[in-house]
Structure formats: structure tokens, C-alpha cells
Amino acid sequence: MKIKLAILDRDPGYLERLAAAFNARYWDKLEIYSFTQLDKALSELKEARIDVFLADESFEIDLDRIPARCGFAYFVDDPLVASLRDQPAISKFQKADSIYKQILSVYAEKSSDITGFKPDGTSSALISVFASPAGGVGSSTMAAAYALTLARAGRRVLYLNLELFGRSDVFFTGSGQETLSDVLFVLKSGKLNLPMKLESAVRESADGVFFFESPPIALDVQELTEEDLKRMLKELRAGGHYDHIILDMDFALDGRMLHAFQEAYAIVLVSDGMAVANTKMVRAFEALRMIDEQRDLRILSKLYLVYNKFSNKVSRAVEGIDLKLLGGAPRYAHAPEREVVEQLVSMNLFQPILR
Image 1 (spheres, rainbow, N blue to C red):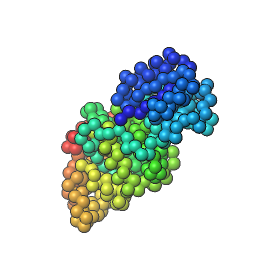
Image 2: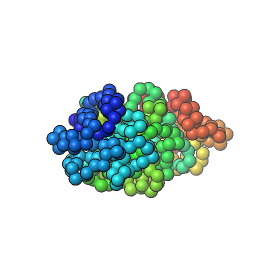
Image 3: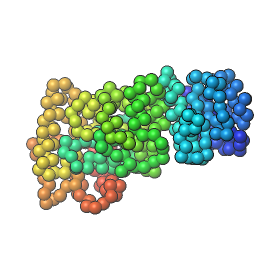
Image 4: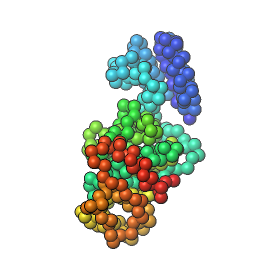
């Protein structure tokens, strides 16, 4: 399926360069129509069944002449302008990838009846979960390190931080304007195109790790229900864009986490080996064992343990539970999070779960 994109601009040279960039990168996703004359562009919208119409800001568009099914945005010079004349605005002078994602966002607003791009026949993405019943032990750092390990092994990996107070940008940065809040809004609305929103909102770091920027308001994550997570994971897998999805979650034995555990091929629990953390780990394991017996979720066989911030002086291996051990890492005092991630990657802790 291709999105039919019409672009109206007074500069034929710019139109030619942009069309060439899109055709080189998105030949299988976009069908480009270029115009320099307003009347010709407007007359073609209905005739060609255009999906998205972009018009240079120098044109004042009569919105009544745009078909209801067609998304619309102004093309503007200023990258700080997000809307113009009460309509969405897209900066002309940015990378083609960024423009493409914003086009998808405009398209998603008008295409609730369309399921999005079809799977390309690739196998469904593998899901892993990182969490800890003991706070402050660096489970997010471990999750980020596994994401980077997979990316450097040539996998297409999505790091999905669902912690209430988590921040993806501590580990990864990439260009984009939308955040996980925009995805959550589409999930809640039930009327907009979720596959398109997932593709338009995702960012890619320089390392090749895909991620969603964390919501500006932390409480937005709390609105994600078990059913929302089910739908999100289903669409992410169906899209065929990723080999791996890493869920970085708070440890809460609610429906959302238990569903994630069911879907996962590996569940990595993190401890620092301190007495309090080990006590919580034992209690969490017993709770999972009871849930597993009652509901037959087959969770226990997926459990792995990794130690982080482990001190030979005060840390001890947890006893009394049967968890497969990935290994351990010491505390890296005063080191930035990204540097710690690099150190963890170099230790090859994740070989037993690497797929």
C-alpha cells in the first residue's frame, strides 16, 4: 500500500529534489504528485484520491476544497512553527526521514479505517522484559545495554520504556517531534490509525536503536492498560519492522506486566546483591511461582537473573530460588549512564538470551 502524497510549492527545483529523496528511500510507501499551481493541485486531490496534501505557506488554501479523507498540512520555512492558520505545519528544511514521519502523522489523523502497512513476511518480533522488584538497581541500564547489544549484532530493535518515571533519552537520542504520549492518545481514542502513529512517532538513535521519547508528563504512562499494551504489541509485531522489542517496566504484578511476561521469550530480573534487594527478589519469585501455578502462564522457565552494581564487599548472591544467571557487573561510580551502558555491552552478559 502506498500513500498518495501531493506537494504544492512554487520552487520546481525543491519539488524535484524532495521527490528524488522520497523516491530513493520510500519508493514502496509513497506515490508523489508535485504541483506549482494551486488550482491544478486542488483539482487533482479528488481525481487522484490524494491521501496527504502539503502546500507551501505562501499559498492560502481553501479547506473546503480538500476532500474529507485527505490529510493536510502547510509546508513552512521556520522549523519552530508547528501550526499555521489553524492547520498542522511541517518544516521544509529538515531530513527527508523527519518529513516522512510527519507525513505519516498527518495521514494517521485521516485514516482510521486503514490498517497500515502490511507485514512483509518476516517473523514476529521477539519480546524480552527487564524489571526488578528492588528499586535503584539499574534495570533500565541493563535493558538499554541489551538493546545496544542487539543493534550492534545487526538486529532491528525497539527499546520501549514503560516505567512510570523512566526516560528513554537518558540512553538514546534521535530526531523527532512526537513522544509516547502521542501513541497513547491514539490507543485511547480508538479512532485513529495506530500502525501509522507507531511508525511516525518512533525515533532512531545513531546506534540504530529505535525508541519512543518518554511522555513529557509521567502520569501518561499510568493510563496504559493491559488491553492497550496488548494492542500496541500486536501492531508492533504485525508491522514487521523489528526483530526484537525490549520492554523496560516497573515491577508490578498487574495484568499489564503478566501479559508482557506471557509474550516474552526472556524475562530478566535485576538485583544488586544487597540484602534488601535479595529479600525482595525471593518474595517476587515466590509470587511469580504461585501465579504460574494458578494460571499456567509458563513464566518461570523464562526467568533470568543479572546482577548490577555488585560489590564484592557487601553484595551476595541471592539464595533459595532457581533462576538462570546471566552474570554480574560492578558499580561504575560517577560514570554517566551512557558510559555504563557501553561497559555492560563490552561484558557480553547477554549471550545466553541473544537471539
